[in-house]
Image (cartoon, rainbow, N blue to C red; front, side, top):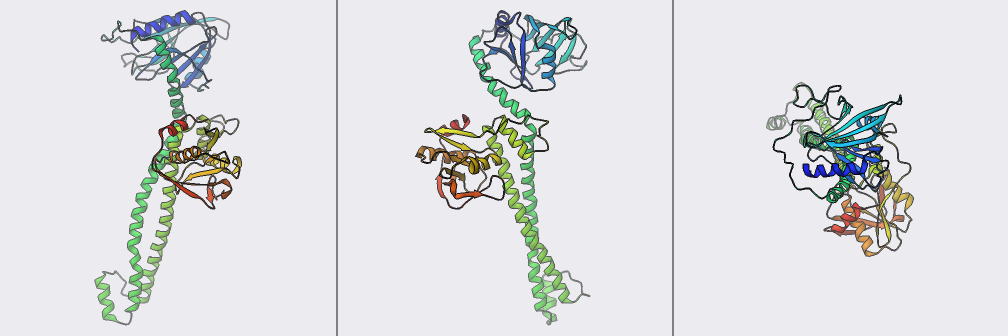
Length: 456
């Protein structure tokens, strides 16, 4: 956003929201705010404090957006909600927006405050001051050693202007800016989810990475244990040569066997048999752990890919499933009722699960026995069910493609059968197929990706 365009936006704001009250302040994510006003309700004021591209603009918002609570959100709502806007201006002929407000405090006294947005790339900030510009609060503080110190109680001074900053640049049409701001809402909401569920995403990535390291350790353990299987041969041969001292001695030397000469050969052989059995047990346990780790890696990688199609409720359910100790009733509000996702093809709904509980519910609670069930073969993935007893070819193809997409695959085999031919497995969300047929796909249509992104 160049300076000339910013000037035009501020002039437009003066005409629209002077003497308006701030009705509400929504913190979409840690760097994006949305202001609504008492009289001017056609649009809302979006303020983005992203490091690379900070901007301010009016925009249209169709859906209600819940605010992030705590920290900055609580401060702004306490200090600015119901405040009257007295003036809007730019400071120092720079990209620093100063909104002058009047707020009635708890003692029914009117206080003048300044809400300042520094829309400087890589130095963006929000500062709240009193009438004389004494700093009350800042999104980002800096020490006295900084060229632009921001300290609570200190008088605010504008940042040193960049001499190369041009003020005569061409004004970008405001309608274009508004449209881009409206589109940015979706980006901001996605970033909000990334911030809010960062512990979940980090846990899945770290866990997947540690499991891959575990596979390397298990491979080394398997190799070592495999090399000890020869102990069975050592034991058998020692017993075979027990009455032939010369052959026994040659065998011990040829194979560099380290044995206790004071111990009977039969006892030595038994020691080798014990080592063999231990190695065999190690191999059995190793392969069980290996397969368990592989399945868990698949689960996390597929789940991470599926988060592209999840909204906040879906992520909350997933978080409870994977990290119940972190995401509980005290940290995030529970959704009021279960919600299941679907797309519509040829007038029919095709449902798909985004976590184990949803997979279980769709297949074993919602679906009728004559509906068609789909799942990628021999791999983790979503349960996909066509809620129609007479599915068209387009429905079936779309369901197969969805099964691949939701398993983070672009080709593969898909199992399909009637719901009456599946039964619950020993784990939540696991389906056991009594009978099925296969469809093999070598590619996925782009329109199916788009359909899935626009799911209900």
